[in-house]
Length: 148
View 1 (spheres, one colour):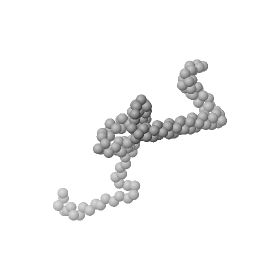
View 2 (tube, one colour):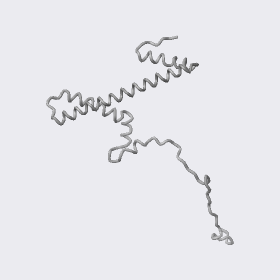
View 3 (spheres, helix red, strand yellow):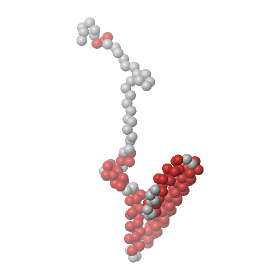
View 4 (tube, helix red, strand yellow):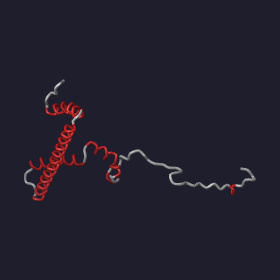
């Protein structure tokens, strides 16, 4: 350094006004929230996340419920406590099935209402929608789509 310019005289404060200075922000989406909800003692969070991607907990429980009810129906002489639990499990499965059916029916109604709304608006959008839906509906119904 220069002998005639001691370091005591170098006063250079850094002042940052709002919206100035070093600003950092993470902009990538945070999609691993599910893995963070799994406590470390519960197992490997990455494995749990991949297993959940294959079949949700609801789907896994549904499969286990179906197997358990079927096996219990074939078993003879269940204990009274087990018989009560089986009755509650059957009732719970029926309630869940009713919830699913109600949701599917509501989704079908919403879809039909949307198609009708597009038809009422008219225009080329409805013709495009018909062109898209006709082959799909024919395929789902087991019919061969009509080729124009």
